[in-house]
Image: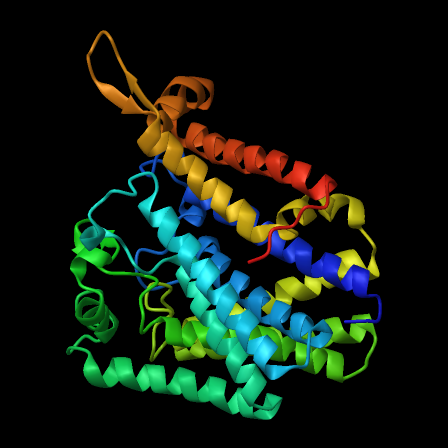
Length: 373
């Protein structure tokens, strides 16, 4: 992506920054009853803009692996230690967030998997595979993962293997984790970041690594790199769309068609950021995104913690009705609903949280404090 390392990282950080900002936006609406459709996940099959957030982040994780290995220590033991340490730290943070603020909560009801846990595991296995295999072997491995996952779901599911009730992904999680340790969707145990569905998420990460590897290997100009990214992105998106007819695009199951479809879109978005940052040098408009992009893990942790404080720690009692409201609901109802109504108030509430976390991250950014696991 060119020889200017600083600009190259600005483009990647800007992409990562908008991903984090959108993740906070869709995770903290004022009310889940008042969310505009593009800001919600697809009910089951399909893909909304919200469904692009997580795979785009894992795609960027793959890119980050490429650059970290390029400038890192060549000692294999040191590399393995760093990979396993980072994996353990990120998983540990995920579990702590699930337990907050009730650390004395019965461990039998603690959710084990989650967003950070999936990121950690996808990073770990991708980084190890990258250490062991050559790029062309990684392509074969990625295809093997995607095709094997399709075969597993098709062979071992029910007569309707891609439904929420009939898929093997849920059965594996129930067997390994137990219903009490899984996410509950309307009281129905199903974990969208479960164990088996983490397998194709590894392929998402590998595609991110392979994308930047082959672009750098070509030694071409930045604009030529963007042409390649647009071409690859269009091809993967089209393949994912065609595969959708046989293996539906589904974020909850992280289907193989979903991997190709979202990775293709991620490549196109990356190309757009390279044009904006590296070629056009539009640094001023994207600079706010760098604040999130430089500290993605800390941004996510703070956003999650703040939402949990509002939900579980801050409790406000209405003296007239004697009803106790959590801080989250009270903040939305008393400030944002009167200001903009339910629908726009819910959106404004989410935007407020994005700006609030951004303001905190700006302090870290200006002081050059970056949290890395």
